[in-house]
Amino acid sequence: MEVWPPAKPGKLRGEGASQGKEARALAGEEELVRIGEFEGELDEEWREVRGRKVLDHAGEEVGRVEDAYVWARVPAVHLLRVSAADGEDRLIPVDAVTGVDEEGVRVEQGRAKILEGPRYGKEEVPDAEARRAAFEHYGYADQLSLGG
Image 1: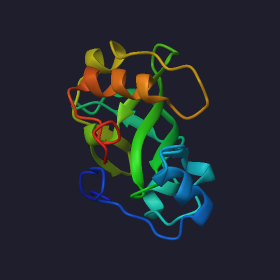
Image 2: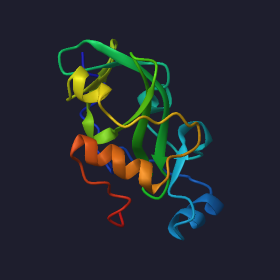
Image 3: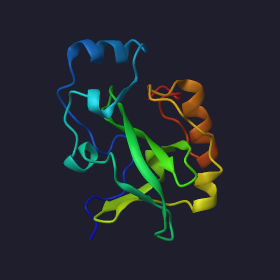
Protein backbone atom coordinates (compact mmCIF):
# COMPACT_ATOMS: atom_id res chain seq x y z
CA MET A 1 0.00 0.00 0.00
CA GLU A 2 1.44 3.33 -1.10
CA VAL A 3 1.66 5.85 1.73
CA TRP A 4 2.13 8.90 -0.46
CA PRO A 5 2.67 9.56 -4.17
CA PRO A 6 6.07 10.02 -5.76
CA ALA A 7 8.00 12.78 -4.08
CA LYS A 8 9.22 15.68 -6.14
CA PRO A 9 10.62 19.00 -4.92
CA GLY A 10 7.80 21.43 -4.29
CA LYS A 11 5.16 18.72 -3.95
CA LEU A 12 5.41 18.33 -0.18
CA ARG A 13 5.42 21.85 1.11
CA GLY A 14 5.58 22.84 4.71
CA GLU A 15 4.73 26.02 6.50
CA GLY A 16 5.95 27.81 9.56
CA ALA A 17 9.72 27.92 9.06
CA SER A 18 11.26 30.39 11.43
CA GLN A 19 11.67 33.86 10.00
CA GLY A 20 15.42 33.85 10.71
CA LYS A 21 16.06 30.64 8.81
CA GLU A 22 13.70 31.71 6.05
CA ALA A 23 15.53 35.03 5.68
CA ARG A 24 18.91 33.25 5.53
CA ALA A 25 17.55 30.83 2.94
CA LEU A 26 16.26 33.67 0.78
CA ALA A 27 19.61 35.40 1.08
CA GLY A 28 21.31 32.23 -0.16
CA GLU A 29 23.12 31.70 3.15
CA GLU A 30 21.17 28.59 4.11
CA GLU A 31 19.16 26.76 1.48
CA LEU A 32 19.12 23.28 3.00
CA VAL A 33 18.64 22.25 6.61
CA ARG A 34 18.76 18.84 8.24
CA ILE A 35 15.27 17.48 8.72
CA GLY A 36 15.74 17.35 12.50
CA GLU A 37 16.48 21.08 12.54
CA PHE A 38 13.62 22.07 10.24
CA GLU A 39 10.94 23.98 12.12
CA GLY A 40 8.24 23.98 9.45
CA GLU A 41 5.62 21.37 8.71
CA LEU A 42 6.19 18.33 6.54
CA ASP A 43 4.07 15.25 5.98
CA GLU A 44 4.55 12.73 8.78
CA GLU A 45 6.18 10.24 6.41
CA TRP A 46 9.02 12.71 5.83
CA ARG A 47 9.43 13.41 9.54
CA GLU A 48 9.85 9.68 10.13
CA VAL A 49 12.00 8.87 7.08
CA ARG A 50 15.25 8.43 9.02
CA GLY A 51 16.03 4.78 9.66
CA ARG A 52 13.80 3.48 6.88
CA LYS A 53 15.11 0.92 4.40
CA VAL A 54 15.96 2.16 0.92
CA LEU A 55 14.73 -0.22 -1.78
CA ASP A 56 15.88 -0.18 -5.40
CA HIS A 57 13.54 -0.54 -8.39
CA ALA A 58 13.51 -4.33 -7.91
CA GLY A 59 12.54 -4.03 -4.24
CA GLU A 60 15.98 -5.09 -2.97
CA GLU A 61 17.36 -3.30 0.08
CA VAL A 62 20.35 -1.10 -0.77
CA GLY A 63 20.68 0.81 2.49
CA ARG A 64 18.92 2.92 5.11
CA VAL A 65 18.07 6.60 5.32
CA GLU A 66 20.46 8.30 7.74
CA ASP A 67 19.20 11.85 7.24
CA ALA A 68 17.15 14.06 4.96
CA TYR A 69 17.82 17.63 3.91
CA VAL A 70 14.93 20.04 3.55
CA TRP A 71 14.78 22.87 1.08
CA ALA A 72 13.87 25.51 3.64
CA ARG A 73 12.77 28.11 1.11
CA VAL A 74 9.98 25.98 -0.39
CA PRO A 75 10.09 23.95 2.04
CA ALA A 76 10.40 20.40 0.73
CA VAL A 77 12.73 17.47 1.17
CA HIS A 78 15.55 17.79 -1.39
CA LEU A 79 18.09 15.03 -0.64
CA LEU A 80 18.41 11.85 1.38
CA ARG A 81 21.68 10.70 2.95
CA VAL A 82 21.67 6.91 2.72
CA SER A 83 23.96 4.46 4.46
CA ALA A 84 24.42 2.05 1.55
CA ALA A 85 24.90 -1.70 1.73
CA ASP A 86 28.65 -1.27 1.19
CA GLY A 87 28.96 0.78 4.39
CA GLU A 88 29.43 4.12 2.61
CA ASP A 89 26.97 7.01 2.71
CA ARG A 90 25.48 8.33 -0.52
CA LEU A 91 23.24 11.29 -1.35
CA ILE A 92 20.10 10.43 -3.29
CA PRO A 93 17.97 13.23 -4.75
CA VAL A 94 14.34 13.08 -3.68
CA ASP A 95 13.49 13.10 -7.41
CA ALA A 96 14.58 9.43 -7.43
CA VAL A 97 12.01 8.48 -4.79
CA THR A 98 8.97 6.74 -6.24
CA GLY A 99 7.18 6.20 -2.95
CA VAL A 100 7.26 5.13 0.65
CA ASP A 101 5.38 2.18 2.07
CA GLU A 102 5.63 -0.18 5.03
CA GLU A 103 8.74 -1.75 3.51
CA GLY A 104 10.71 1.47 3.04
CA VAL A 105 11.68 4.26 0.67
CA ARG A 106 11.55 3.12 -2.95
CA VAL A 107 13.82 4.62 -5.60
CA GLU A 108 13.66 4.21 -9.36
CA GLN A 109 17.31 3.21 -9.81
CA GLY A 110 18.95 -0.18 -9.42
CA ARG A 111 21.42 -1.28 -6.79
CA ALA A 112 24.47 -0.84 -9.06
CA LYS A 113 23.58 2.77 -9.92
CA ILE A 114 23.15 3.63 -6.23
CA LEU A 115 26.40 1.96 -5.17
CA GLU A 116 28.26 3.75 -8.00
CA GLY A 117 27.05 7.10 -6.69
CA PRO A 118 29.37 9.69 -5.16
CA ARG A 119 30.19 9.02 -1.52
CA TYR A 120 29.16 11.50 1.14
CA GLY A 121 30.48 10.70 4.60
CA LYS A 122 29.66 13.98 6.30
CA GLU A 123 26.89 14.77 8.74
CA GLU A 124 26.58 18.44 7.82
CA VAL A 125 24.30 19.83 5.15
CA PRO A 126 25.66 19.08 1.66
CA ASP A 127 27.28 22.01 -0.11
CA ALA A 128 26.67 22.95 -3.75
CA GLU A 129 29.46 20.67 -5.02
CA ALA A 130 28.12 17.60 -3.20
CA ARG A 131 24.57 18.34 -4.39
CA ARG A 132 25.77 18.81 -7.98
CA ALA A 133 27.63 15.47 -7.94
CA ALA A 134 24.58 13.60 -6.63
CA PHE A 135 22.12 15.19 -9.06
CA GLU A 136 24.46 14.68 -12.03
CA HIS A 137 24.99 11.02 -11.11
CA TYR A 138 21.26 10.34 -11.08
CA GLY A 139 20.51 12.54 -14.10
CA TYR A 140 18.30 15.12 -12.42
CA ALA A 141 18.50 18.91 -12.34
CA ASP A 142 19.30 20.42 -8.94
CA GLN A 143 16.60 23.03 -8.47
CA LEU A 144 18.71 24.85 -5.87
CA SER A 145 21.52 25.43 -8.36
CA LEU A 146 18.97 26.61 -10.92
CA GLY A 147 17.72 29.25 -8.53
CA GLY A 148 14.66 27.34 -7.34
